[in-house]
Amino acid sequence: MSLVVRARRVVLPGGERAAAVHTRDGVVTAVTAFDDVPPGAVTLADDEVLIPGLVDSHVHVNEPGRTEWEGFASATRAAAAGGITTIVDMPLNSVPATTTLDALRVKREVAAGQVAVDVAFWGGAVPGNLAELRPMHEAGVVGFKCFLLDSGVPEFPPLDDAGLRAALAELAAFDGLLIAHAEDEAVIDAAPEPAGASYAAFLASRPPAAEETAIGRLVAATRDTGARSHVVHLADGDALPLLRAARSDGVRVTVETCPHYLTFAAEDVPDGDTAYKCCPPIREAAHREALWAALAAGDVDLVVSDHSPCTPELKRLDVGDFGLAWGGIAGLQVTLPAVWTGARARGIPLPQVVGWMAEAPARLAGLPGKGAIAVGRDADLVAFAPDEPFAVGRLEHRNPVTPYAGRELTGVVRRTWLRGREADGSPLGRLLGRGDR
Image (tube, rainbow, N blue to C red; front, side, top):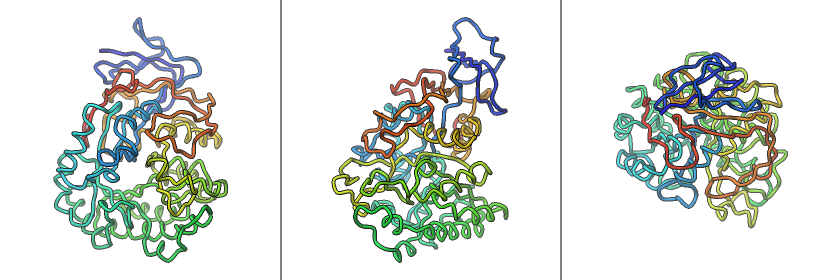
């Protein structure tokens, strides 16, 4: 099977130019001049750019156990519609949580045969599962997620400082990766309780100091053990100097942020609209702008969705109580246009956005076949119309509750190819392990 796609604008590792991308059997075999194509080549429209399929390394699929929140079929259809050709499933919110080798087998068996894009898996690091980390690593998980405070689900308890250091020391022995939800429980316990419809009250219940304290603990443990760690969903711009200093000292820590922290601002969140609730919370515009500046400077490495949906009932839109509602943003399908809309407004070019959303997450997850249009990589391609506006309407997510509903964004995904085949929502995806090509 062969596919050739050409465009006047193709985002390649060396920049953007006119080119033809040749593929065979799902792999890129050559990148040539625009006119160097055989009969039958696909030519993109003048307003379309050919970009690599995105990699979203932070997706809560929730199946099995909470499939009514989201499942592999619906999540991967949404990913394909949004130009995302690989997702990495988080180990919690499913039951069982992916904290043992047996649970990983269950997860893979459930996912097999129903994924519309490629799927890899995170394992979990929780109290008492230290002996499971190496077997899961050898079975292909891309790394291990931990929480430094209550995760919100009983089957995924947090690590205390001793547990964090033990996990990092174990992972350092085989250069495994630990990714951490970094908020400090003691700081949050000392803050006001969230209750009622006031977004300002919810924001006060999870202050920036909670992120800074937890990140400080993670950095210290990473430095002391020589391990690799990663901060997920950074919302606090004031934590950036701490991370910048650690990285300049050689601490092996990376960091991501998410589209909702780059799009929304606390000042604009309506009271009672619990679709906006997530943890850590959407902070003030000053934090948003600090995150944009850090991305541009290379101090934040990647942007991924943290797609964490639930049923409408759990969002408690009926009462609009931020204390009662489940915390999580559903936005997988609109990740690219949400980030591109903000980047475009700030003069940031599309190749830089692609780097944050394709190349960098592929590198984090250890997926060498993904993240770029280059010879030997998978033929994961997206026809993207970067100047076309649209209002967010129907999405492929299982549940429709999202703060993006009705929002005007710019940038439309018109076609997606997964390993050279049209990604039309049918189960074309594969289950990947770390290092798979």
